[in-house]
Length: 267
Image 1 (tube, rainbow, N blue to C red):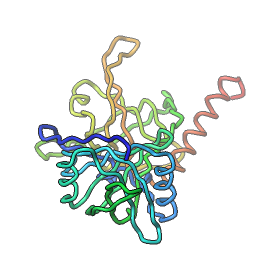
Image 2: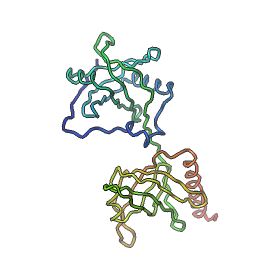
Image 3: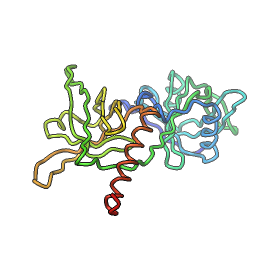
Image 4: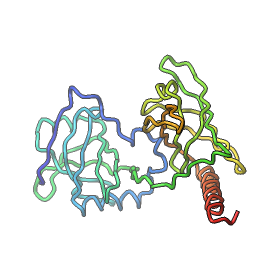
C-alpha cells in the first residue's frame, strides 16, 4: 500500500465540495456507467492520489483506487495510515472522494465501506458510484460589451435577513461561462464571493432574453477614465441550458464579427 495520510479536522469548518451542489455543476455530472467506469479505471492506471472525506468533511484520509470490478459492481481503495481514522471511516454512511486527472478535478461519492484485502494488504471496498463529477471548466472567449448598445443584468439579490433586493446593473463583459458586472461600491458590498443572484435576465440585442441564475466568483476595484470608482464583479452562470448557451454564443460571435469588420474598414 502506498504511503497515505489522514486527519480529523475537528476545529475546522466542514469541507463543501462541488458534487454536493449538483444544481450549480449539473453540466459536469456524468451518469453514464461507461463514462464513470472509464474515469475510475484511469485513476487506477495513473495511481492517482485520492482524498476521501467523511463526517461532513471534518475527517479525511489519503488513498488511491486500486481495483474497479464492473461485474461485481465494486470499487476497492487503499486503507489510510491511521487506524483510528480507518475505523471511523467504516462507520461513515457516505464518503466523498476527490482526485485529479490531467489537471481536471474528479469527485464521486461512496456509500458505506467494508473491509477487504487487495494484493495481500488491508483495503476498503464499496459499491461503485452511479455518478461522477468531472469538473473541467472551459476557457471561454470574453466579449467586452459594446458601449453603443449596452447590456444590463436585472436580477434578485436575497439579503441575509431574507428580504429581496432588485438589482439592475451594467454588464462589462460576457462569455459562455458568465459575466463581469459593473457595480457601484454600495452594491459591490452586498455581493461577496458565493452570493447568488436569482432570476437573472439579460436582454441580448437582436437575439432575445437570456435567463439564468448567477454565482459571484470574484470582485475587484477599478476606476473609469474620469476617476470614478466601481467594482468589477465576476459571476458564473448556473445551469445554463444548451438553447440559452447557443443564443449567447450567437450574440458573442456576431458582435465580435461586427467589431472586426469596423476595425478593418469593411463596415
